[in-house]
Amino acid sequence: MKKIGALSILGTLSLMLMGCGDDVKQENGNTAVKEESNVVEEKNTTESTDTDQNNSASTPAEMLEKMDELEYAEFELEVEYAGGTEYEVEIDQNSTGTVNAKIEDSLNHVEKHGSDAFNELHPLIQQLTITQESKKDEVISEVLTTFNLPTDYTKFDLEITFNDGTKMEFEDKKK
Image (cartoon, rainbow, N blue to C red; front, side, top):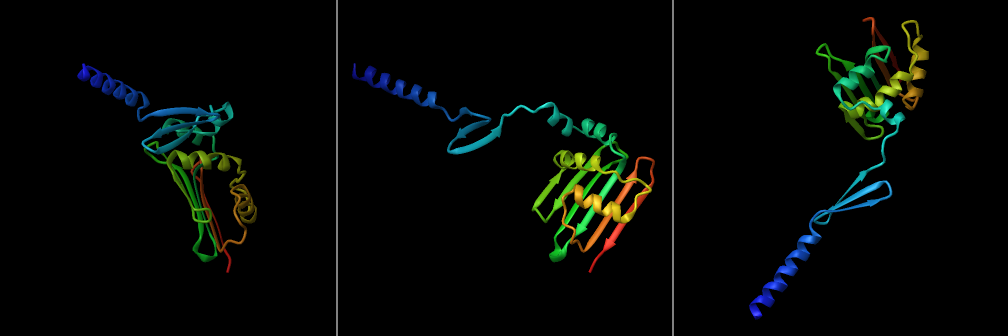
C-alpha cells in the first residue's frame, strides 16, 4: 500500500513538472516573450502594414524587383570624417542577377549586409534626384541630407552607374 501511495505521489509530481515545461509563451501587448531555462527572447509580433511591406524586400526576387524601381544599377558611397570614422554604403545588381547591399557606418556603429542593408538603403536611394546633368555640389548636398550625414567630411566619394550603363563619380576632399 505504501508503494502505491509513493508511486502515486511520484507520478503526480512528474506530471506537474512536465506541465510546467521549459517552454512558456506569453503575449504581452505587441511583444511575445518566450522563456526557456532562464533565457528570455523577445519578438515583435506587430503585424506589418502595407506601407511596411512596400518598403521591405526580404527575398532575392523582391530585391531585384525593387532595384528596377531605382534610376541606378549601382550606387557606392563613401564619406570619410576626421578621426578615421566613415560611412560606406553599396547597393548593386550582379551580372548573375543577385543584389548586393551593405552598410558600414562607423559613425553610428552599424554594419548591415544583404536584405537588412537593402531594406534600409532602397528608400533612401529612391528619394535621390541625381541625374547625369547634376552638378557636384548639388549631388553632395542632396546625398548628405538624404542619408542624414554630417557636412564636415574630409572625403566624399560617390560612384553611380545609371540604368543605361553610364557611370559617374563625384569626389570632394577637404583638409
